[in-house]
Length: 295
Ligand SMILES: *[C@@H]1O[C@H](CO)[C@@H](O)[C@H](O)[C@H]1NC(C)=O
Image 1 (cartoon, rainbow, N blue to C red):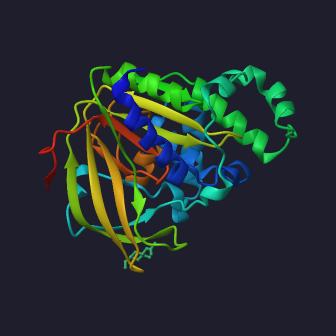
Image 2 (cartoon, rainbow, N blue to C red):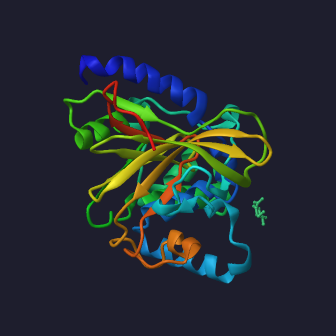
């Protein structure tokens, strides 16, 4: 790993300590909200997509708020108001990011699940076991056309993957959604106040996954993506500096993709943008000083 990555790594360490953590403990126990958004984003697992499809349809009148993160590029305008779901997590109860040596000492594969459950003393019928199974399945699913994906079980493996995508000649920069106010409201209307485009030729997005230790699902798509930082004002006065990625070409996404259900559109017919929860990362080559432009 190159010398120039060191300051960045320290920064990422801090970042992960301060905000990545979240209650994956809670997610493990609960419904795995992040998984739903991730499934929506990654959408390469047919089984998963089918499940989401059914799920959204059978509850058409009251769609699960956790999927309320999608909109189209033409709606990315100052003054736009929409309901958005942001999970709130308690960093104190979240799984830790393990050093590579430790993470690599355990298998990370679905066919090892029974052994892994023993290692973590989890009952095969527990919700935690189900969450681990879902995560491993998602991590082993095939990428869609034009996509590269990797589940990182340590900071080092995340950096290695990111380097292979962005190229080792770049310095890296990491962006995350940050909550500027403290509140427990997870779902409310927000107004887009200020929109800044983050110029980047390539990007890697990393999403947290429910697992007994920190696992990031990282992926990169060849098709055109645009990255934005959007200042949001909540109905209750909450302020969020939210990261948004807009996928300009959705033609390779499955028909059952949850974003198409939420937006009521067909694959390829429109761009799909989505908000990032606070513990997800967007990694890009480092920006030039003059790189930011307000829309
Ligand atoms: C957002 O505002 C609309 C219009 O005022 C309202 O019908 C809706 O219930 C609000 N949504 C949330 C999540 O507060």
